[in-house]
Image (cartoon, rainbow, N blue to C red; front, side, top):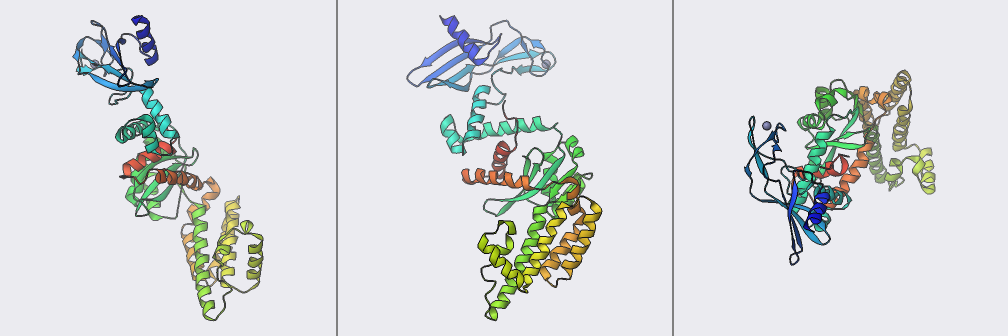
Length: 409
Ligand SMILES: [Zn+2]
């Protein structure tokens, strides 16, 4: 009888010779099943460094590993790991086949824990389901990310995006690097300075990957531009078109605010409450808003002029040829800088200063819109984790959920 039972557990654990189940202890009071594993006397085992079969020297103290529960019984593996004496590497502890070196859990338990963590909205729910501590859960998550990061080092990456992100209620910033083709987070670092951007590009990409990057999307932000110029000298910088449109939108809003203030002084409240209309894409306006908007367009408002300049710039992104895009831009720039609208003139100048990175969009067609999708996912990670005690935990959680890593042991 005992033979078939031990064989059953050996099969369940995927054990192969010389590892065998040497004992099973069912503690019905504490609902605990202990499975003892050992290696028969006289059997040679591989050195963990070179793999050469060596004689056993002695045994380590008894250790336990948590395994998947069998029925309602908490299942524990018990073993005294043998040590071998390798002629080349000395006395070494043999690697057990069911768990990673430093893990207190079996591979199968870790794999299950990863599935539970991925499916759970928050880490607290996962902890309850797994019945292990916060630290143990976090360590499983951390090891999974470390494994995935190592496995990712050789994949080819051609288009990336770098973006800033606030965390801890907007008091601190993080910089995030995304693979735009595979829609995944490559890495996250604290801060948004040139130093943080440089370390992000260095840790998020292997040497080989850095050399293969064709283009990098970013805001018109000096720290990111300089870091990219230094670390990825061959990559084209592409300024994210949504950031550019955002600058023009802010300029229109500044014009509206100033004009509204001036008009209110003369008792004219035409522009009161119109902020939304000027910031919305006309196609998305309601019927009523469209009517109001047409009425505005008929009047000689400064904000109307600012708005037209902003809207006209939309055409830029659709040009196929560099030459035509450049001549369009020259005309647009002349119009914008002769508008006598200070915020519009300023943003036109900013755009001109970054023109190389703006026209590069027509070559690569990349934007950071992918990051926006990831951002909303990060938002829910943040909301469900009740604030991260430190940045590293935040980074691990982001990479675990948004890194598309191969996480299993
Ligand atoms: Zn050896």
